[in-house]
Amino acid sequence: MSLQVNAIIFDLDNCLLDPRELGEAFVEPVFSAIRASNLGTLNETQLLAAFEDLWQRPFDTVADEHGFSATMRAAGCRAYATLEVTAKLHGYGDLVVLNELKAVKFLVSSGYRRLQRSKIEALGFKELFAEIHIDAIGEANRPGKEGLFAQIARRWRFAPRQVMIVGDNGESEIAAGNRLKMPTVQLLRPRVTQVLNADFHIDDLWQLKVLLD
Ligand SMILES: [Mg+2]
Image 1 (cartoon, helix red, strand yellow):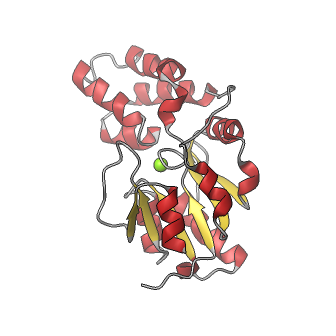
Image 2: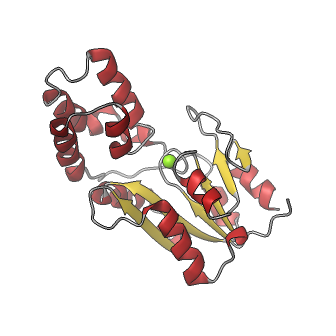
Image 3: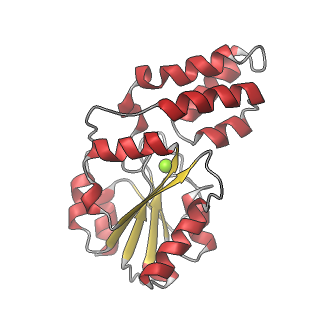
């Protein structure tokens, strides 16, 4: 496949930012709130598996797949909604490559709006992106990643094949990009499991630059 990429839409968590950089203490209020409202719904092993999954995937997906009760879901949501990063974040060590990519760059991230916004602010790299969008959990009329990708292509008059999707999650941004016929790239950061539905796989952003050159 010959690539003619004019735009790249990046995911944030586990793609440009390792959420673990926030630290265990930062998310402890969320874990505590879920634990306090568990009331025997999940056993300890199931609870720990859910917490582990929360480092990789958005809260609503994790709550669905691990069978959180309505009470746990509400408590987790309340706790998440108050989280905000105030310290500086660095992101993965290869973010410097973003400056070298000629394509127009976009950032589309799912999560709680306040938290996602604060993480982006803390990374200090907003000016690298032409547009930044948050697919916000808990807000009405969510366009979802697919809707946001399609809107960007339409507004900027890019054909789908000119818009590359770079992310870690096969069920989220990779699947959305595939449905829109946009080339998809899975960035295999540590702890990310390779999926089969991406067009390309890379280990870091340096390899993305090679792929585009
Ligand atoms: Mg991600």
